[in-house]
Length: 501
Image 1 (cartoon, rainbow, N blue to C red):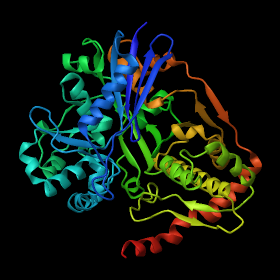
Image 2: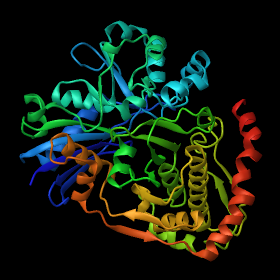
Image 3: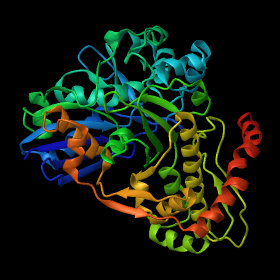
Image 4: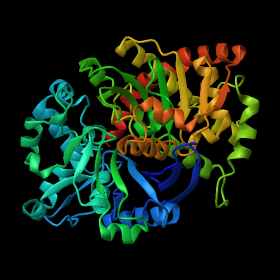
């Protein structure tokens, strides 16, 4: 028996789990809100020391004083920060969803070219990525540049605080928009654009690579023993996908928390420029030799929470159970109200940063349950459109769809996805999938598991299947083709006109 820790650095919360390797049982779990502050309207930042304290507190409460063998980190991928020669932060972490670096994102595509950028990185430029945030700092905080000894993605910074080494896996490095997916090395052309060298960036290695044991100071602050081995984890969506068995051929994983990611594992890098125009990303997976084709929506669970709060005035917390109950009578029967769910850009497959959310088909007879149902239907339509697009681009047939993430607590949303996809969807019984995936990578790194299959066998995941209702599926198929798919094109020019006012 051995104890493994998975630490998950999420947008809304930081979590830690303690996993027993033989039985796959989660012995303990804890979480803390992810500290965030807003120094200006539209800006979101994390204080690095506050993030570290939240991580240390989670680790101490979850596993302090126990004989832990290894730990690894799953993390939101794009955020990063500059540090000096001693590893001290020089500026707050600009959150991945902060849009201040949008001009720099445009500049990157103008200088490099969209197709060339995708050929190197497997991604289009966006204000989310580390490179754009670094360029914003260079232009707006130039005094930081000569002091910067390293640019560290967020999990690399926490890893450095734990073991004193600067290292990062390929999946997290990919989201800095500086990694060449063809060679899995830092791109010389993009480093030149950034004004950085390889020495400014952490060492690259596959997820599951052992790095070093805890420093005495980190052991004291976390309550863990100094012998705990730190292992490279990876992008949270990909860690979660791994834990859910999403590495198997023909399996797509829909991971929905604050944002939504649709993940399809493919055997190699696919530098298809058509994928770039659709906003799909292709980059290194947390499993060696694998790549992921990924669609995304920046506001999914956060959009659901936003609407639920609006529909629950005077309540400290939205009553999701009541909203689901009130939404059910209209399922598969009532056309509208329907949303274009572009609350923070369109995501894939439109790849339109100007597009915004819209509500259509509302009338005075609609209830709050109808408005809630309409958003869940629209998010399910979004998933269908992305799965169809990804199948075509990758040239594969998706045989199984797995749902993970916080929004799976909404049974209505899971059922709507089955009905609208017209196929069964599988909901595995995995508590905190991202953290569990990180713990399994820790087990691989310390030698407890020899293969990813060994690691997955240890957790013996079961789950639930949501079957489609054929009558509702036929009704939603009509709504999908006649209303949802033309909706973006019908509103595109209006949204672009709005953006100019």
